[in-house]
Length: 153
Image (cartoon, rainbow, N blue to C red; front, side, top):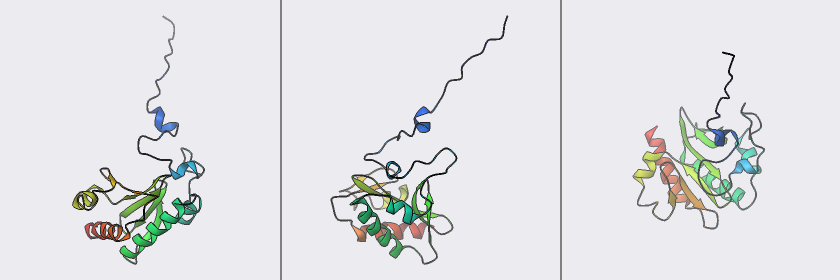
């Protein structure tokens, strides 16, 4: 018999094509040049990430950043992790991101579970809290969530 070549199936095409696995709203990746598979091209720092977002998302991100900064230890640094802003000490404390209709805070699932009752009016998933752009940011609540996460680390 001759050599028979078979085509390999391409698994996980949605990830390679830049299709979002879930969530609502347009991500900042749509506003910032998309990073390639090698990790090049995304925002290099938090200021660049925020600058690439349109209003009113930019204003909300600045508010969220200030609220988080006031609750993290002085030694915490800002980084880009998973192409979104984060605050880190030894470990990442929290991530946050802007979308067309909301800003998200990613304080980890355990923190969200701890504050489940206080988060009742917001869209919540396992590790994310969504704050609508058209509403004022609950900065006191954000500070409580971040403080609880800092206590865990």
